[in-house]
Length: 224
Image (cartoon, rainbow, N blue to C red; front, side, top):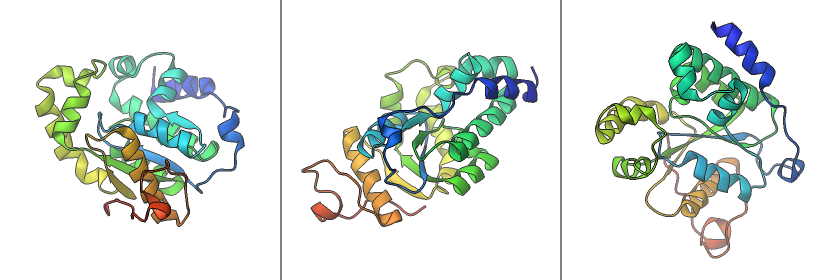
């Protein structure tokens, strides 16, 4: 199937904006927050918690692609190749950003590497790079077996090469937040701190965390 044929089939299957209590609330943020970073950085885990905290819908770009295609991303790669996958990924991410209400969007590790996808995120959303060091990524990805790229050799070496290739591009994100060995809720607080500082708004924090205006701590977000 060529690029346009696959795109038409997937677009027809792409679910419309769902209804729910989270989506019925007035959004606390003016733009969709797009989480970028390598596999193991915590995009999905942090994204779900962040969406719950901010009363926003959560979307996972990879899940949306698989649901629309009716097959796994690995199968799309094997059948159609990476260029076709990236084209479809770009179209779906752009559609989510343009057509859906403000939400939290987790993207695949390679999405932000595509210049056109990166431009769409810059135009319609706010990108947050969850930056993790090599030891953290190795430890987290070792718990899962669904990442075929890591089965092609030594996972540490593969992740190290990906860091060299991708970190300079991830650094173009609007905000950078460290994702380390601390519990996910701690990273969520840091993301909220960074969003508050960027948008000049006050967002919900967990009580007793000491973050944000109520706790007197400033956002820990690195400049891109």
